[in-house]
Length: 318
Ligand SMILES: C[S@@+](CC[C@H](N)C(=O)[O-])C[C@H]1O[C@@H](n2cnc3c(N)ncnc32)[C@H](O)[C@@H]1O
Image (cartoon, helix red, strand yellow):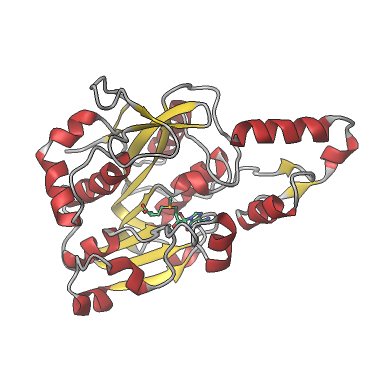
């Protein structure tokens, strides 16, 4: 059975990966994003969660084909994505990575259209503010390439813990994101567009989840294959694309599989996501506010700090 792990070249040679590509109607390629979808599918399939009557909740689904795939197995699926105005501010709508309607989710025709209409719903949901209405309702939750876009490492951790509330006891969460292979200390920690999680962030989440009675097995083995040794630079290619450079960090994908314990209580992790900030410009400030980040204006009271903050910010996003 799959455990939480990094994307490795070896996975691409396995039967489960090739079969998932076939079912997803995705041509075989050495691409970590395709790996993320295949990983989520396989993790849920082999745990018996893709069966008629099972209920799944997807976050930040964009136009990914997973909701249709799960419905084709008879699951009831609640697909969610961020509200359209915020998605425009972040550029998701323009890059065709945001979903705004049910029809966007079955473009490949993976699910028979009548079944799809019956089994899949779509609603806007902010991953930074998951409504308690969803508590204890689902057999599985998932997200692909989404929780790194919540504004900070802390916001991502909050999402991973708090979305567990949506699961029934024994339910399974599968989430993928990028993993920093260059450093376990230095990273993109706060950024309106994306952050990069380190091993220490996963160690922290795994401990918090296990302390609450959840089960997580994690393997941080880094592959040494020839194809994965290539680091893709912007503009990124489709193949090979197992490792990529983001800012100055080499990254790959990681998949996290969490089983909720029978006795796991409600998570309510509320980190302080306050930024001392005023000078980054209205556009970015609005985008950060849309991500739930609070502001204090004290930066302007300390001479030179405003300029320094600007420089640090531009260093990280360049
Ligand atoms: C890189 S795209 C990935 C889309 C899709 N999951 C896939 O694998 O193709 C990131 C997705 O996260 C969504 N997203 C970003 N911030 C979000 C938030 N705060 N709440 C909900 N969705 C968010 C975007 O709208 C977009 O659909």
